[in-house]
Image (tube, rainbow, N blue to C red):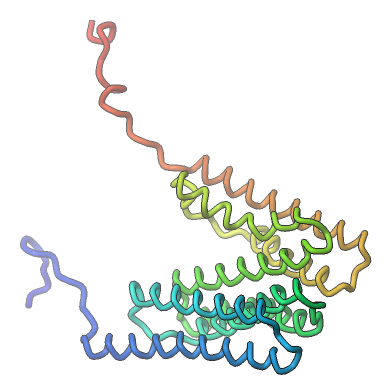
Length: 270
């Protein structure tokens, strides 16, 4: 039971007792199950209040089950701590976004209940500024929590862009799909998975997408100002992605030369 200094086997990091890990795993499963139940309750309330149709129910249920499955799997693979208050806030946001998705899907069958849609999306956007602060103040920041927050943001933007596209045109979907296109491209261009430096401009542009899409969805703006605002949002988002891609390309790891490239030629040998 030495410290492992000098020669010999390096010390292993301390491991939490199995009973403690098992308890934490059960608690995490309860948290994600509570999120699933909360989504079902929200859909039931929306159905009672506005008469949610089959498309809304199916979409809301699909979002709830997908969120529960992906989050449970991710936490089960790499989580060894309590779920934490910040992740609870993000899970609440995911529940609200699931409600927004249900309302947007239902709008293709019946007139959309703008009041409910705008209310849910507004609270989800406000809570986006809360979970990060909670994580920092409670010392519970984590890479998984940040990724969870980012995916909820991206899905909300996608859902809002689908709704706005019904009035302004399919080109609005570029706003919601740009993040997913970037992720898909990274599967073929691994250097896109590189780490980006913190950027206030990137955060500002991302926040503006939700605000502009929600304002447009609410119907508060006339057609021409709404069109101009969404075009500006798309232009800013394109600029932000282009800037990040350029930075990732410039800082991408360089491949080592192959044996064929380093083999001396007759001229260099001579």
